[in-house]
Image 1 (cartoon, helix red, strand yellow):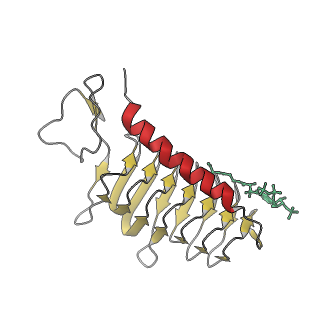
Image 2: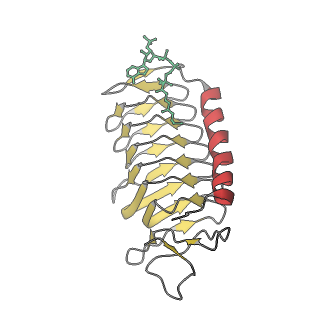
Image 3: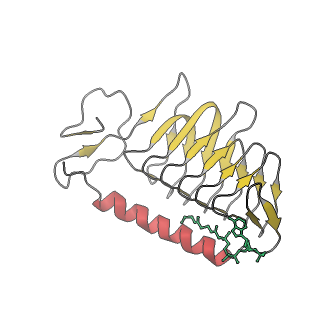
Length: 199
Ligand SMILES: CC(C)(COP(=O)(O)OP(=O)(O)OC[C@H]1O[C@@H](n2cnc3c(N)ncnc32)[C@H](O)[C@@H]1OP(=O)(O)O)[C@@H](O)C(=O)NCCC(=O)NCCS
């Protein structure tokens, strides 16, 4: 159970966000794995139905939405500032290749990232998969439902679309990314203030 009327003295996982609007508190499932502990900035928002395990760093203003799993067991996951990791994402890593997501990124619903690097100001479209050693450079967009294969380099400002993804240089619109980043920073603030479970 992730909700209780009081915070227990000892819980199986860390308590992150407390909402006392109706006398309930949210216990967010954040797990240590051996010596690996998540490092979550107090100004980040994690929905109580997300799961964070092990070596996961989450920066200020970032948000993790329902059903998302960030599992830093074999290696590290780093999420910068003001980045959203949306509903049902799977973020994993390998021992050799950390998964790094920069500041001001949008990781859309149902995205799977595995041992890749997403530089600042990128948008990873809904349902896409980005595989090992891929680098998505600043200002690039991965189209919805695309698969970016191992070792692909997505240049700054490019679209990567399709399965397997092809590169369309200079076709990403920066304004699309900026709009989504701002939207999710603001949304996370509202959720932190107003979300409460009522059953
Ligand atoms: C990739 C994306 C940004 C392109 O949108 P756009 O800028 O309006 O551009 P277009 O729809 O004209 O597509 C550009 C080109 O990419 C192609 N393309 C777009 N999405 C594609 C896909 N999933 N697979 C294959 N080709 C695709 C288009 O056919 C077009 O080809 P062209 O070179 O022949 O013109 C948009 O389709 C998308 O996937 N957005 C993601 C939104 C999202 O998931 N947000 C996260 C939640 S907030």
